[in-house]
Image (tube, rainbow, N blue to C red; front, side, top):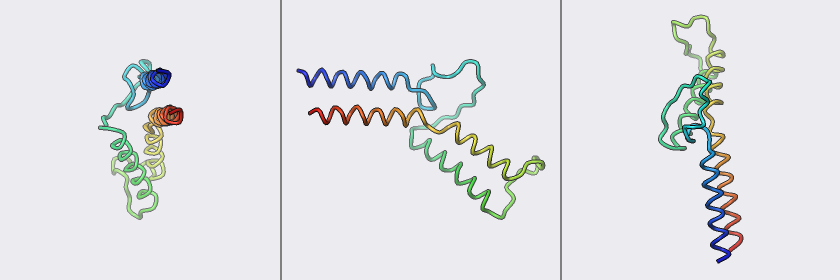
Amino acid sequence: MKQKKKQLKTLKEIQDLRTNLIGLLGNQKSIDPKGNHVCFEVRDNNHLLMQIISLLEVCVFALDGDGIMLSPKNKNASKEDSVIQVLELVLCILPESQMYFMDKLEEKLSELENKQ
């Protein structure tokens, strides 16, 4: 009976963590109503990770490649300025909240497993 109570308590803690999850894959009520936001859809964490990797690969190619990757309409920008903009975007979409949630989930499940 004591083990079952511990399991229920752990499940409740996990549910509370998920309820308070903020970020791209978090709940919609976490969006700041005062700010301007741009949204894009991802299927899951793996899809989000692939999007971030692609953006970082583009930055590496832009800085390492010999070709000019600038739009002809934006003649005043350097490739470094463009890469900085992409890197700032990457920083904004990093799934910090999801990673925190996964760490806590692992911690709670490990505690539960060790008690058995």
